[in-house]
Length: 427
Ligand code: AMP
Ligand code: GLY
Image (cartoon, rainbow, N blue to C red; front, side, top):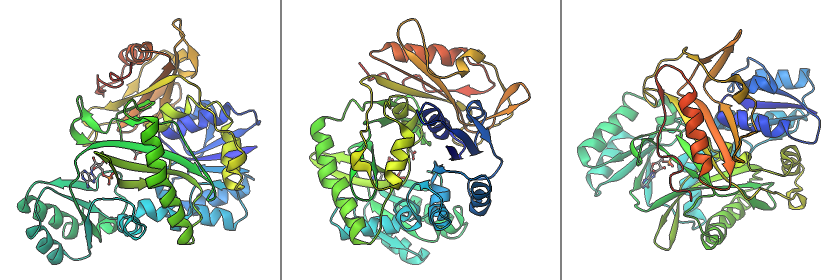
């Protein structure tokens, strides 16, 4: 089977790895891929937002199955285009992707279907937004409605700060078109959790729970990032909570989508805030989370190609989604400076044998190295992004933490940075 995976992060490297493990014989292409996907796939230099280029490639090369990693091609309607051309593709269509690509759409949807979310109002106009922040108590949360690579959310402590943020969005246009509409939300306090399910538009199955470390610094200090690490299972999530999330959030969301005439196929990722007995939706993502997916997929036992096909063919209910009973961890090695400015192009020096993922070390810990922002040139790997490598491991106990930190210490590149507290809560 010829498979095309779209994207270039650690998530796509993990998907590539899971596909390679499938019992269905396959030949993988990654567009554009990274230094790590080259181990299993042929990298094709087509950008993730070049929907036409990707479609031409898929048609010309008779691709049997395409899997979309990131949100941008989904929001551009890649699934609609591929499906119209008779190609099989995993991911939600353009209308369904609005749940992530328009925060206004997603908030209006939640309100319409009585699914708990922070109180909010949307604005297309600076003056009206300024009046609103003047008349409402702070903190407030100000969000660009469109896609902003995780950088479009501000927590503002007072009116002055809110005005500065609004000016930067409406006048300086720091998010371009993504900031033409702004959503202003009430600030919620509680504990945050990400929850992923897979659905074919008819039934759904939850993935194992995971926890994402969003902030750049230890103890969750400093700036928000795409994610500096992840663990599974999420130690704060009981079975009881999972049942409540399914009943109060996932099921009403899927029913609401059906009522809107939206057939949602793919991964639905809910960013949730738990406050006492209440569960609020902070946001939806319409794709696998990164780096949660790396920690999740190394525990997947059932066949991922069959999973993708069962979703596309609307037959998910007959697919047995099986994960092993390990714990897992993913540690992100980043370029110093990330999530702000950082330099790239530094050589990465590491034991090449580590590069073949799925190795078992002497304590029974299986570890994996996935590439994110890397590039392969002749015989060298170079840093090529903010998040550079993902060191992952699975096993029964705390050994997995020692394993990833041992490996992380022995990987050398200039400006290497990683959090020292990922997975400390696992026991
Ligand atoms: P989002 O992309 O909407 O999930 O927002 C990014 C991050 O901002 C979340 O993970 C939260 O930490 C924070 N956040 C978003 N909305 C709220 C809210 N209404 N109250 C408190 N924190 C929020
Ligand atoms: N780790 C959060 C995300 O993928 O958006």
